[in-house]
Amino acid sequence: MNKLLAQIAKFGVVGMIAFIIDYVIYRIFNVVFESTGFSTVFPQYYLISALLGFTVSVIANYILSFKFVFERKEDMSRKKEFVIFLVLSIIGLGINEICLFIGFDIIYLNWAWLQGIMSAGFAKDVFFKFGATGVVMVYNFISRKIFLEKK
Image 1: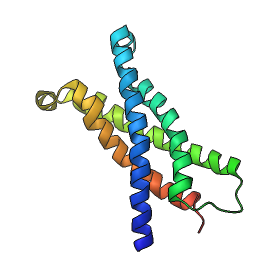
Image 2 (image 1 turned 60 degrees about the horizontal axis):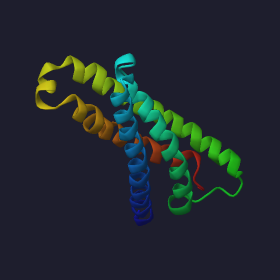
Image 3 (image 1 turned 30 degrees about the horizontal axis):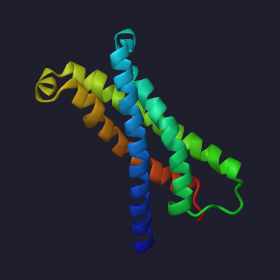
């Protein structure tokens, strides 16, 4: 049990590093898209920002996860390991995008009382982004433990 708790703690640290990378890139591209007017052409521009942040953070997450968190399977090639990691991460990205879309476009934009207690920027860039990250973090730990870690 102590080994599992230590592993969860290490996963949390690696996840925070990956989240910071993801979040900084997400925010940078949101600002770029908003300042260039792209946000008026494509109102769901934040989904593109999320994809770009994800792409960079998944590489860092892969490297750090197998350096500090998970024990590699000796009988699995690094190429196969990365492909599985990438597929699991893409599923996580899908979960993230769905959570952001449901949270902002369906819940926030249709509930006036929610708009009264938080700004659209806070809802999109903090509240629903952090919520989506929490959901995906649980999924990532469980799926990687099942499919990638040495038994």
